[in-house]
Image (tube, rainbow, N blue to C red; front, side, top):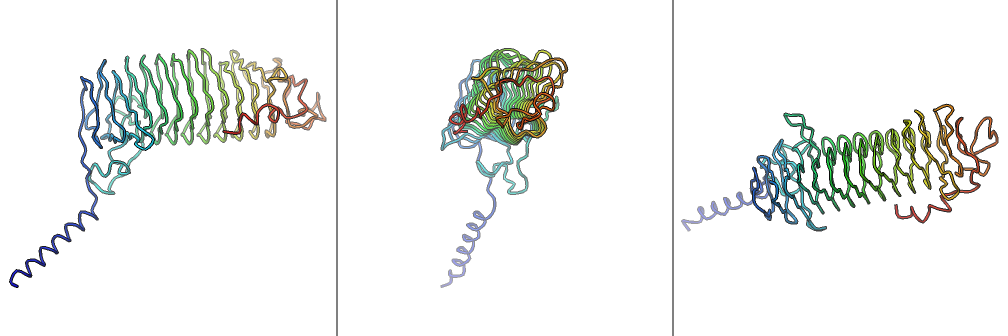
Length: 410
């Protein structure tokens, strides 16, 4: 009987401990890492905390196992001069994120709700020199920190002559570019990923002398262009992708060399132009380009001779807007006809006087052809400006004849 009060106190103490452990935020255990990795290494623990920059030296592989969460202190990065290989699984994704991100790996910094992750919380993943990055079933969040040297890192920055492969992944909420490929050589494969809500360009190619295969991409909600290409490419095929709701152009192409083809994409509801082409001659084939704030396709420069065929271009302010002595081929033969319909001001506008654009064999929305005050005043289809050859216009929709089966899955 004399020990009963002590027993009650013990039970009360135990209950308090249990309640505290349940109700208060917990600091989840993390393996701290930093510095050079000089031999082949596997990260297999549940959570890693990068406390100083990690560099995978040339000839060495860092493998990150499925389900791992890698969190970065402010301003830290993971750089691959060798190979960074992070291959997750559909049910065991790998996360690269800000130390303040409690949504995966728990409250690693142990501060409860006092802090939240923000774009630019860490610097990003980077491949340099002969380094390569292979990612599958990963999520990269909140990178793009502005370093002391103003290098302006992206969530993923590839600037070497190795290889970059990203598939089945999400690249999101970066302060700058989602993926940046700059002064790089080699092969780049991007497949079935989402690049969303980054502060600048979603997918940025700058002087990238690469072979690019890119398919099944969602590029959405980025602050500037959805995708930007500046300068040389060896070859690039971009297909079966959706580029939507980006701040300026869906796709911006400037002085692109090599062979560039945009095939079976949807470029919709972007803040300026759907596709802006300057001094470049890509192929635009079987795309849907609609509801962009200004031009569906804007083309400029006397070295711009893109082939625009078999596209559906509608509900833009101007369907195709050409200037600066650009000379696109828009349709041109019956098998290559486009649907250019329901654009607000013009279906095709040519602002380069005395250069006649070939826009023959297209459907303008009505069997009477496009409206032109002098050359076709009874036309009830989308209007065209002067200096547009709209002859042999189609009397029915090319979309019904060519497209419907091709776009049913987009």
